[in-house]
Length: 249
Image 1: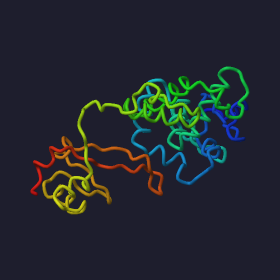
Image 2: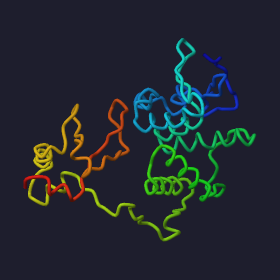
Image 3: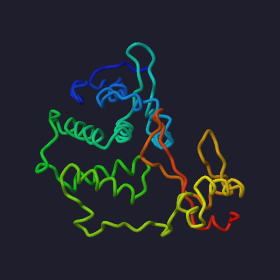
Image 4: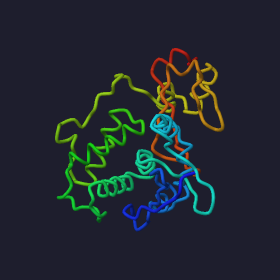
């Protein structure tokens, strides 16, 4: 295992982020810098499907993440994973991490967040959009996230400036919740979910509705941006109109 060292120029929220001899950064230190909430511990993030996919993508460049035992151990990850972990915690924290790393890369000491007038909206938008795409968001979701972050930091709504406040979905299809579909036929969400079960389109696994193989062609699983108390993300299943042809109404 690599030797653990301290890179004194990486300091976030008055917390020194240690690195190992391979240049990976300690996620435990980042967790502490973010506020140390239990729901944000690195182990919960590593269980995230998107995190696992990102790690798999990065494995051809080396060893992106490693857990070191012992009193001074912890979870160490490459810079790309640091960015993704920070975004999972919050948009505010991930932008603080990006600025700190940029300051180090340009030889500047980390400073307090710049005033709005000192921030380039276009640069902020590109930075947030790139990270959003890196962690698996589609282009529309990434653009919306980038626009929200840029507006919060600079006061500039980039999409509004371009008169693109509404983005067309690639598939041009609308997906509905069981509540929305059930309301068309004076049925509750619970009743409609049971119709989906009876049609063999979904099943309940550990308290969560999951589309079956038959149901996948009609379903869309999305992350809600919220998390359970354990830190695992809350996902929601939505359905295409075509599912109505499969259930008995």
